[in-house]
Amino acid sequence: MQLLLRIARTLFNGIVLLTCVMVGMTVWLEQRDYDFHMKLIPRGLQATSMSYRKEDPGGFGPGANESGAIVYTLPREVAVEIDRQPTTFFASLGPKWRDWKPTPVIFDGDWAAEPESASSMPSPSPVTTYLNKYSVGIDIAPNVRDSIDSAILHGGSYYTFAPDGGVIIVTPGQSAVYFIYRG
Image (cartoon, rainbow, N blue to C red; front, side, top):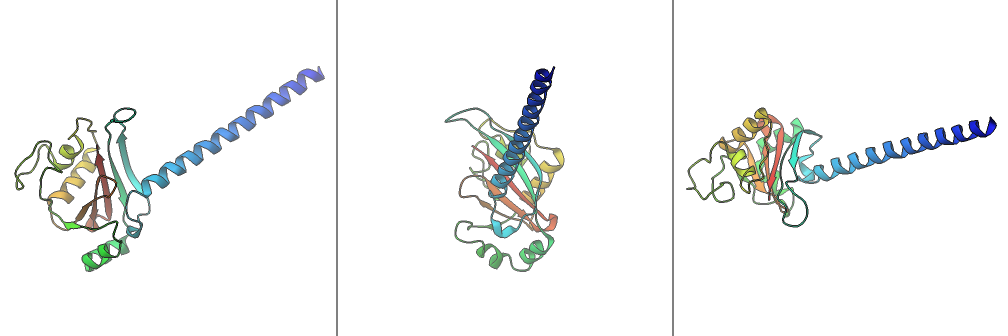
C-alpha cells in the first residue's frame, strides 16, 4: 500500500513539475514574441503595447512568403511632439530610421500589386493591395484596414520603409503606429 502511495505521490509531483515547466516556457515564449514585435518599430516612438496583430507565415522554409499587420499604441505625449516638430522628432530616431515622408502616400511599385501610375490609388484598398502583392495576403479586421487606409490616403501621418522590410506608418492623430509587411 505504501508503495502505491509513494508512486502516486511521485507521479503527482512529476505532473506538477511538468505543468510548472510548461507554463513557464509558455510565458517565456510569449514574452519573447512580444519583445520581438516591439523591436520592429523605433524605440523612440515609445509604443506601449500592441492593440492588434495578425500575421500569416504563408509557408515554410526559404522562399516562403508572409504578410502581417500590427497596430501599436503611441503615447499621447509622443503624438503631440510629432505634431509640433515632425522633422526634428523623426531625425532623433537615428540613422537606421530615416527617410520619413508625410502622407498621403504616392503609390508606386512598392505599394501596387501591378505597376500603376503614381497618382492612382490601388484598389480595393492600399493596405489590402500592399499585403496581397505576393499572393500571401491576409484579411485584417475591417476597422484596422480602414484606419490604415485613412492614414495612408490623408495628410497628418508619416511613413517610412523599415530597414528590415515592411512599412511603418505613424498617425499622431490616432495615437497609433502601424507596421505592415509582406514578402
